[in-house]
Image (cartoon, rainbow, N blue to C red; front, side, top):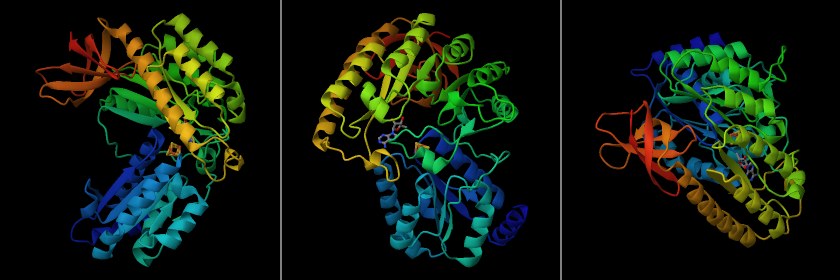
Amino acid sequence: MTDYKNKVQKILSARISPPLCYLHSFGCQQNVSDGEKILGLLTELGYGITNDATSADMIIYNTCAVRENAELKIYGLIGNLKHLKENNPELIIGICGCMAQQEHVVEKIKKTYKQVDLVFGTFALNELPKLVYNVLTERKLMVDITEYNNEIPEGIPAVRNDKIKTGVPIMYGCNNFCSYCIVPYVRGRERSRKPGAILKEVKELVDAGYKEIMLLGQNVNSYGKTLENPITFSELLRMINNIEGDFKIRFMSPHPKDATKEFIDAIVECDKVCKHLHLPLQSGSNRILDEMNRRYTVEKYMEIIDYARSRIPDFSFSTDIIIGFPNETYEDFKCTLDVMRKVKYDNVFSFIYSKRTGTKAALIDDKTSAEDKGKWMRELLEVQREVSSEFFKRFEGRVLDVLFDSEGKNDNWYTGKSDEFIIVEAKSDEIIIGQRKKVKITKVFNWALQGEIIN
Ligand code: 5AD
Ligand code: SF4
């Protein structure tokens, strides 16, 4: 591979100025993290980075496949690039990530989107120098969606797009095969990074001044099972918690079937771990959970919630919900609303079911109408608004730890996230971006909080 790296470097260094690359990642944090590595590799090859696609010599869309509308958006964007390519035939257009890992997508790109030069999937990071070399020298479509049975590539440089908080993948792939989900097909089997490599990366980031580390994986609490010397996610959390420095730890996402008391104990006992758990419920109906192959019941899910709240009454929860799984009834849907009222989530991410070719659920003859699904979505949003606006009141007068990361809408206002992962706004005469502050909450909105900085 070094060979290809040298060859590309030689070609690019012969140019008058370094060529520029524009990359946009869609989808989850894991994909964003892959995108940062792709930029790291391209920088090594000699590319500069631009935020302006129209002035780029290479445009890469790092795509998501989780729902159909994510894919439709990408096809629209690729279509729009046609005129850029006509104006600049030297432009290289690349499509990578989860959507690109699917054969039917590659076929469609080959047939319809001739402006595309490069398609590579989620396994091909290490192959990038070779692919770029081939595109530069042969100028014909290069495709690599091989499922490399690779060791996890370590030591790939990352160009991180945030200086305050960042993601660290701890595992790749997924073995769960939830019946609606494309991820196991596009990201392969579960494999964990060695704890030593993770600890080293986190230490380096903390030394570089990062204030928040998000541990990433499709099912983080199944971490470590495939290692030569297996360890649990709880053990990993405790090891990372022992790293010295001023930083906090989050993780995304755990699976309820692997959520044990020991896992909750680790969160509770590690002072750097935020007391917020994003625990995807997907449905509150045991019948639907079974059809989804989720391998837990609502009762088991509630046991975790109740245990966490028995240890910390204020524990904050958020969740993902799918509305309108094939043949879901209104009775099933009402069970989901019941769980939402019981758990009192601070945040709910709800999605209408999207049929994904290749999954088991795609084969079900779905009798539930799109109209009903839309109606249920509106009802769910209304219930969540009521629950969270009521539940948010618990914060009034309390002091929260907030990491500020951006400017607010008005002058001297800043916004950040509390440990509970709730948006908090506050006013300050000094610039406080990148700082953690104690904020006394004075106002409660539906989706955010406002307060005064006390130190
Ligand atoms: N349709 C709708 N939502 C889906 N998700 C995953 N697959 C689908 C699908 N086919 C949702 C789940 C998951 C989140 C990342 O996306 O709720 O937790
Ligand atoms: Fe989208 Fe899932 Fe791929 Fe993340 S892993 S980019 S959510 S399909």
